[in-house]
Length: 214
Image 1 (cartoon, rainbow, N blue to C red):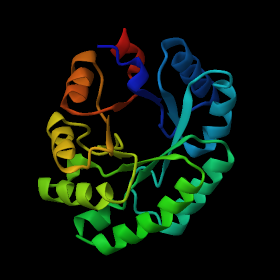
Image 2: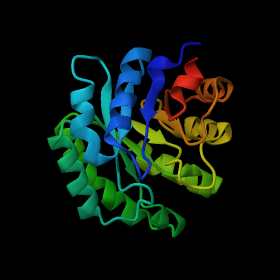
Image 3: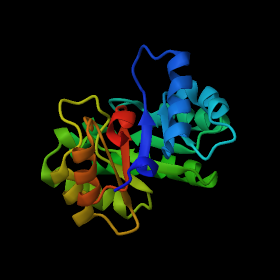
């Protein structure tokens, strides 16, 4: 199974250097990865580095903890779109999920979705499945599934547990068919990557992408 075109080639560390973003972009072009995923402040440069290729540019919003004010997330989204971003990986308010505040989460999404969709951008909502119960995951699938998001994403990679086959299967069981799944967090080899795809993931967020496809 070829995984290249399912991979968001990702670097989101605090100490990220511009030359690393350039290398990430060159690798994405060379290996045929679907996109590069970089912090918001590197979107414009990533667009320059991938210009003329089919590689998309994604960024993260409210990263990595998701408890930013809705207004702050909206500002990040608008600025990223001005810089030319193609896809937005938005961290849901995980604290609100843990507190069962579904009204807050629905309100957050109701503010974000129209802005993203008005520019025909892709939205992936990250729910940090590794720190959630099965019941919380199912409720997220129900809330975000009916809202028309493009992808539900397992993890930021910054929690104690990243992607799991069990979580992807649970997502697939409870999401509408039209909503796709992005698995990310701790994907370091081909076998695990393939197992996640077999479980229902249609996109993978990896920093070990070159190792995985090699």
